[in-house]
Length: 214
Image (cartoon, rainbow, N blue to C red; front, side, top):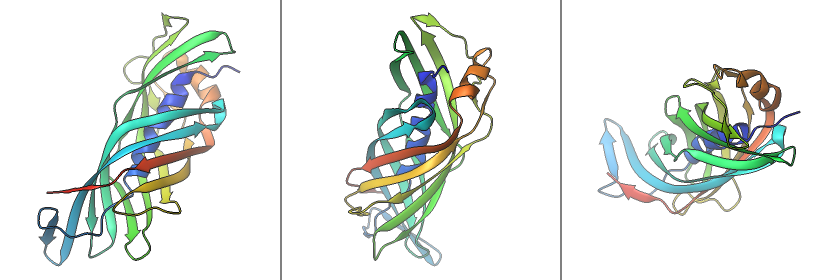
């Protein structure tokens, strides 16, 4: 069974989006805190790196570096956020012989949402994101995928804080997710759907110390 790298990269980008959005600071600062009605919110930006393991191709792909902008509601202990990552490009040898290179992008479908327990630093967040493949080459030969090669439905990614995580200094967020089937990838659609979609994919994101801001 062929296993294109494009699939690996697509998953990686998505994951980062979901996981990173989880953290938000419990610290109040005049430049970072806003009061709207009865609710008080605080904004924070984190540097993000990480990796995702794609089960179907038995491969791990590095994620980032990127940034995560979050807003925490200190009244309701809820979070929203947006992850920004550069296009992910990677290479591997298919069947151990043919070099494959793919570039993917993550399209976040609305803000990530989650909850935070400021007394325990426990965080959980969920994001809906579409995985898009923008280019693919095999043995140096471009394989057309069109401009709309993406998952037919958004992937749902939920991550939770791991031991040692701190909403101010950061830490690790991890979870599992399922990759939906792809559509609109031209002749590559069948191949992608024979190899990439499925459950059991894992994600691990490392958040650096957050920066409070307006």
